Image 1 (cartoon, rainbow, N blue to C red):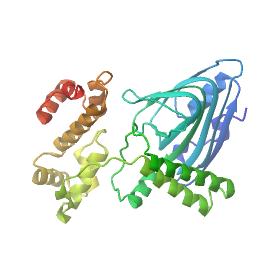
Image 2 (tube, rainbow, N blue to C red; image 1 turned 45 degrees about the vertical axis):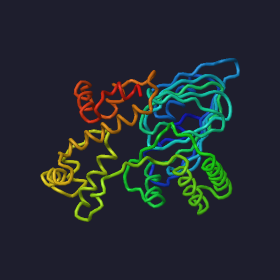
Image 3 (tube, rainbow, N blue to C red; image 1 turned 45 degrees about the horizontal axis):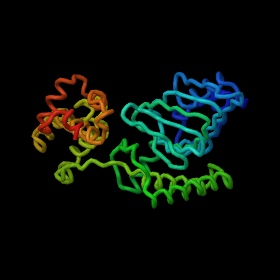
Length: 331
């Protein structure tokens, strides 16, 4: 065995500074060690691993830096475990075996050589047997910096659709970016100019393959006099699933609490928290329209977007859209 994650890689990846090297490996031949190591790698409390036959083994490797790292997970056996929301956007695919993931509202079977984006904002359960899995980790802050320059996207965090499948033309570019990443690592290492160029290219290929979703902000926010209000509105759109206070908005906008409230009244004729509720309702509706009516659970979607009282949520939804959430789900 090559050692535990704590032995081989004592600093959690999420605690690394931007661009700090990542290089570790864990491997072994017994399920107990696999449970411990794989749970640690994924930042989980517990994973469950079992033998399928006598030839059990596992190996997990990672190389790159905290901005971009290339990883491989191999296991001869069966595994099941929860993966919490992490510090990275992760693209993954398998080259052999079977693998599934389930976040409660996204259920996905991994297919050979087809890259998918793991749910960036939801904990999910990963299940696999006899699998060889490839992964590319992109640090969120790094992707946000690239998106700002490459796509001129200022709002963070970015919103992605994990159910989106790559288009053929972007899939070709993605494969080319992976080849360049691997070549740069092998030839010159993660401190080289070649690596920095390759990881930038990989991040832009990621953004093209899994383009972030953008909210259409009201045109009035483009006026110079509304620049500070725009900062508050962008913050709401970026953090709609989280608790947001007017005090936070005042700090983001550089305005007093009273000025924030007056600005929302002047431009939108609603309070800041009413605007937040409307954004959340729009997000819920967007998800309900995409869900399978047989598997979708309205309450789960509503709670994920900050609606704790389902009765009041349903009434607010009907008032905004002229129908109840279950009617939207059945469309």
